[in-house]
Length: 69
Image 1 (cartoon, helix red, strand yellow):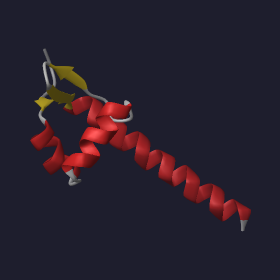
Image 2 (cartoon, rainbow, N blue to C red; image 1 turned 180 degrees about the horizontal axis):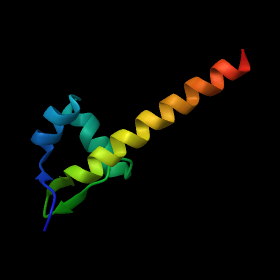
Image 3 (cartoon, rainbow, N blue to C red; image 1 turned 135 degrees about the vertical axis):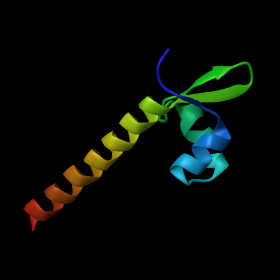
């Protein structure tokens, strides 16, 4: 099995966001995650892909704004 599995605490440090934000995003399905028992777990490779997609989405939004001006 390749890729690291991260806990909530790991993701808090990795993304530098509040614990409630991680729980909210995981529960809504926006943040790629899975549950084992009562614990949320995260594949680091999927989080990296999520970060990249969010970054790309922000860049597209900025380029559309500049085209409108």
